[in-house]
Amino acid sequence: MPYTPPPELASLSIAEIAELAEAQKLPPVDQWDPQEGGDSEMRIAADGTWYHEGDPIKRPAMVRAFSSILRREADDSYALVTPYQKLSIIVDDAPFIAVELESEGDGAERTLAFRLNTDHLVIAGADHPLRFGADKPQPYLQVRPGLEAVLARPVYYQLAELALEEDADPLGIWSAGVFFPMAAHS
Image 1 (spheres, rainbow, N blue to C red):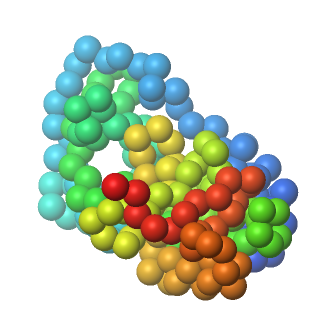
Image 2 (tube, rainbow, N blue to C red):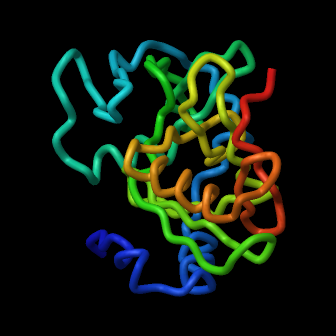
């Protein structure tokens, strides 16, 4: 069956987005312990472009497939993992980019949904926290354990505007019952 991306977030309710996000089944890469290893000769650039042997991967379906078998290792390196093989991959910043944001509700009742550059959907909350870096003001969203998405600049501006409208002290944003302060944690 051919891949069809989820509809535009603005056309969906948060409940519909949550259903789509829950339906995105990913392989259990955290449970696999392959014996064969190597180098994938791949890199994910800070702008989200995936490269193989220095050339950009131009097929979005390939990027989506590779992103579904990506995991972070205990030594903070990244690997593409199958039950039989683990191949190292270089990640310049974060492996994903949050490219779209949809917000529903206000204050503590707000829920934030993000679309990634791989078309995966993530609802910010206890399982997918937002963090604001100490070394740079760029926010990150936890996608899976050890894997984050950096928020694209327009998405960050949209998030900041929502937080400013809330006028919370400290400055921050709610999503799915969790408050995320926008000041960096040391």
